[in-house]
Length: 72
Image (cartoon, rainbow, N blue to C red):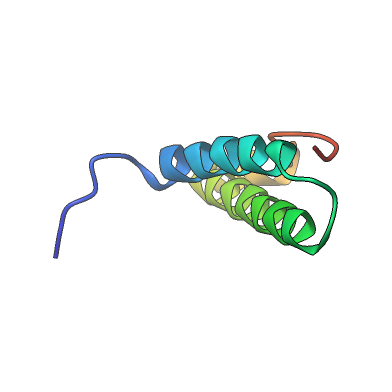
């Protein structure tokens, strides 16, 4: 099995950035909506990953905020 050089958070963040760039370059339609859906799923995964890294006390006090707000 190959070792990952980047953390899951870093990989998700890069995926989100690339996905938004690609979606912005697309014309409106099903393909663009599908790309934006994948970006939203990656945002949720990133939020869950960050939330899981918090200590139990912090997790009660802090809810992770969205990485990117709005849609492309």
